[in-house]
Image (cartoon, rainbow, N blue to C red; front, side, top):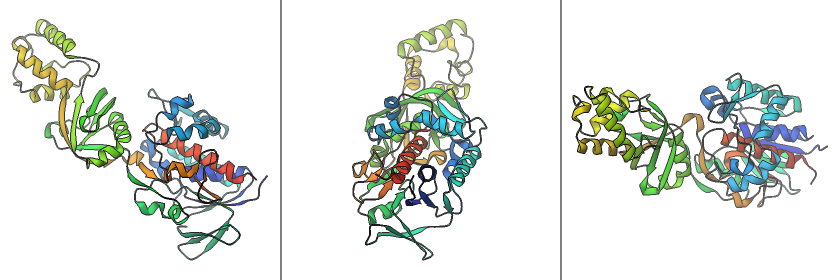
Length: 408
């Protein structure tokens, strides 16, 4: 067992998990959080339910859900995987459930369950928890220890230091790492929704589809998944995934670009033509706008018909071949102009941070500064929505915590 003095900077998911792992391995751990509350992101994630991880238990498949960092995470995942996360919480009385899309939540559907579990584990392990403790600066002293100065002037000393200060939404968030010799990959938002000014689209706020395909031709990006219309434009898993994979490309376009939406991606012009013909025969006397194609919501169908230039009083029996072709094109490729982004508040994630090449992912130790470790979003890694970013936090925190506490 170790009695090594460890200082963890950052009281979010990664820092907390690292502190617990190190303390349970026998280290003396002090955890510093600059705000008045621990685990804020855990509290609000998943609409207050906390999407703890994802029910994907093949490590290589799991690693493919990270636009940045997936390959580097393969080694840490072998030490602490999604399965280990489920078991870890279960061993402490918290059972997780799996939803249809693979996301895993506590059976209580309350993030406070996860917060309480982590707080209890930290306290049981003897972690010294300190709030309102912003770190002003860090230096290494003559014997290789870290001298941590807090904003109030207090100084702490530790043999190991973990930085888990979260995503670098501004370069200043990575200043402690830079002061210890590291560089930073410029941060840009990774999970965000699309602002679209189209009045007819915004009028459909609240409408959702179980499957749509969106594409940004200018960046050669394409994604399928559930889609949600909002008062601002478009959101949902399809948008969030595309924004993650295309984070840097969309940043390069200044978040202004044409977006193409295929509302029925499992159909094609030939199938649509057959469906239209069947409607002419079975519902010829009915208005086009009143007989939507499954599974399109009625409100969306009506707007697509009108956007195709077809008068509202058109009946199926008089739909011309030219009108049918235009409508099929509208369904398969509606074009919008994206004018900006809105950060997804549940999953505010950035790509950028400490370069992966500057960290040993066997231990999460710095290759630049001996005794320094990293965990979580401060690193240039990020996952798509669905519990993957939390799993990266649990995994890197656990590996770092155990490595810091070991005598190696």
